[in-house]
Length: 90
Image 1: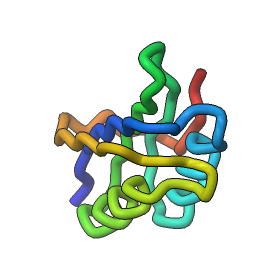
Image 2 (image 1 turned 90 degrees about the vertical axis):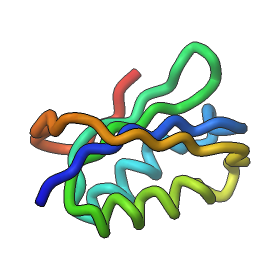
Image 3 (image 1 turned 135 degrees about the vertical axis):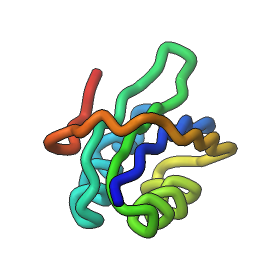
């Protein structure tokens, strides 16, 4: 069953290829959605797919790519949007 989760990532997460690395992880896990930078220097990720894959993405987000420093990850469930792919947004 497809679930939807919104992740908000705090820390040094912009300018360290966080969005692009997230897309790669999401595609490997078979997830759809997007990752975007926010004006407050956080990253928002909306992802959809099986709960186990979303759990794996959450675990990855708590580490991030090598240059990132993740201070906090907020996670909220939401209504399924039926994204077709996983994309990086501005």
